[in-house]
Picture (tube, rainbow, N blue to C red):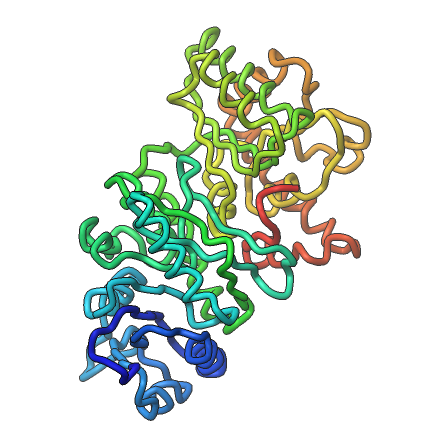
Length: 424
């Protein structure tokens, strides 16, 4: 804790378990970030066995909370707690007006914290009700560009960032029981939005995130992802079995073709299917949104914007099908992602698509919404066909991994992790 005064202005909180090497580096990037206000550092440790606890106990500027989350004690298994439970331990005891929440496998670019604080206060002075400021981050070394993420409803969310403590208290802190590990942060930000707070991005705050830190723990956490994602969708009224289209909003991506087919299914067959779009705006988003309203599909269509890798996995897994209806192609990545995650594919029948996708997909003319609609209906009506497509897709994805240009997708097939952002 900063000893200049007892009036702590900032609290920096993080959870950790068995990541001593990365934790030490993260702490150093906090200490030398250039904070000019009184602050405290709070670490919640889940019962590390790699020496982290011994190291933390020697750090006189760190408040350490130990809550064992594995193994047994006195002959009984220790109750497993959620990510939200652990983070709330730190959030509730934090003394700062502002709380910086980060993970234990990051580096904070110098000046980040004060840049975020000054930006937060400047916007508040302008009369805006700010609940949180999102930092830009990238997963190093596989990503070159920094980004912030959005969540359901195209609302900005915080992966690493700063929160107003009173706003967290106002919305009831982080959900502890609905989610085990994933999506509680997105849910928290949606609660802030629903309560009238804004979540904004800070253009001068950057974080380097090292996703490869302790891959064993990350792989174990990913096993909880599907259940957490289903709970997230259920709470915020997005049913499973939606049509999924991950793509930037370019005109040639033909989002409107999927909307027309969805409208046809509704009018001709009384099939009301949800549609989920993810991807950034490249100039055509407003037109697509306008078409949603004109076609009377507002209650069916969900725009999620940019989503995290974990969210992308959940979206594929819970979809009725990937509808990839671009006018130009073929493009390998979205169908391969879908194949590897057991999601049927309805792609455009464009030059080269048959050679790449074979009999593992239902190819359609992207200009003919009737044929698109019939492919969707066929998938709905014929469960054996759907199962066959899933099986063929997985087999085809595994075959593709032998080629040099798809070596990076091994993690999708073998560990069910996405390998890129949601755009092409």
